[in-house]
Length: 332
Image (cartoon, rainbow, N blue to C red; front, side, top):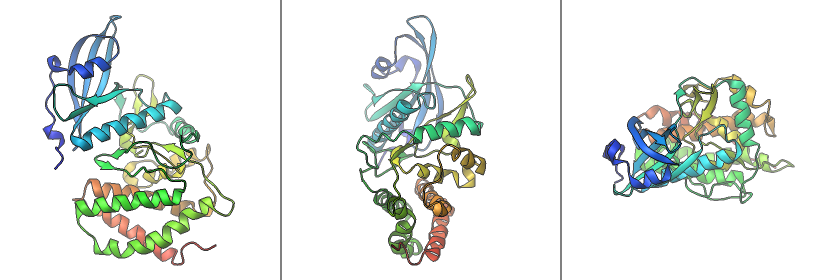
């Protein structure tokens, strides 16, 4: 069984690991290390330092444990680096990730520390930046996927490269269903719906994107862009995003996480985004595509928090609605 966040050792100022310290730029002295929050799978710290030029610099450090913790922090570093390469002012510049030298089975990720306000970013500038990120069609393979496994919380994503968006999405959905069953137990109702969902609904809503003269290019997505992973930098008043679980995907996949009201992105964010990037063709399928993508994010929530049965019920309800609407699936 994987260790949990409560198993992560407490870190004192005098104990900053030598490997972490060696990764921070031009540090003359560590002034303080302070606890900065936790989730079920990681702890966060603020590291205040005195640089060799006598300026004070602060860094953010996330710490996790075990094999999943190592791979999650690696995925966060690689995701953040990929986003930073396209939109450098929209995400913290990652510094390093790696293993603690003196604490076994413990791993870290570091970047610049930001003083963040919990407000939602300004809709105009925020959506312009999201669109700019999505407009760089520079997938290194030209395919959908990512070069490492990325994590939504402690939930690994299947990022295996695929030239078909429909196939990539289907494989990823099946992967999460399997983990959900392992964590929450089997659902006879969902199991009865899945064959028609895979054979009818997904082909009906995604295949038209890549047939009949239509095509889509892979866009780099944050992959978990909800209100908890976006904030306002108090020093610049600009929106910033963090904690990504990236892949090269259909750009509209990102907006699936804006559909649930709990994530606080109102319709104004959708409208502002689409002033930069139009809805994909066929446009008449747009709302149901968004519902399909939202279902994947709700399935993530159902798997991360299996004790909250409402999340899986949302998935089942929407699955049933789409099956009833598209009983014939994709038709040439």
